[in-house]
Length: 193
Image (cartoon, rainbow, N blue to C red; front, top):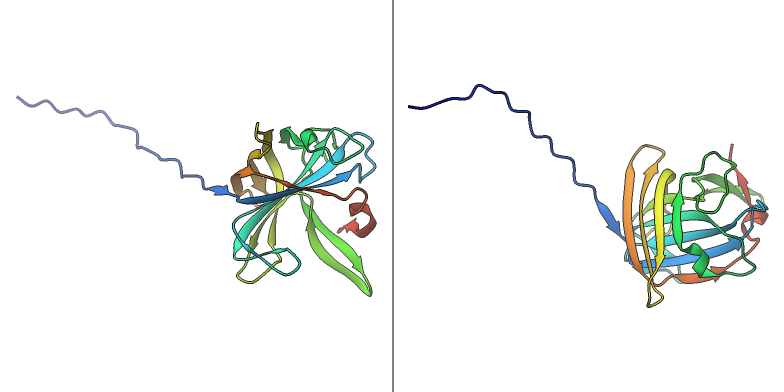
């Protein structure tokens, strides 16, 4: 005798697989308390996929890059140990407390005869074949973890959301070139309205 079941089974819904971007090259630029916040120093961590470099050292596509603008404890020098930690979405546009990141936006940079527009703070970028200019997607929320390994390399992992609600999940393990540029940002930039 055969028995049949009339119970309905819920359909199986599979979550889409999230792509994790694996970056292969990195640098961290220390600007100090560039914005005169009096509460934190700003570091821009830039990570790149494997790309060629032009004569000036800029990555040239095709490839991907991400810049995360991190607020760390204040220091008098570019102390990479201050990067260790987790960086989360700030509570508002005036929150520069250590452990937050600065959401991205477009700025205008003054040049002789006018201004040019460029991405600033935190953004993801696709670099087209032969291009050194990323097509930016500004990062508005998420979190990034920065660890310093026993051998002095860094492990950086994050999940960030762009202004168009696209998740950018990424990882990097390797050395970071440390660049010391305190006070450079505020001289050239103004936020575009």
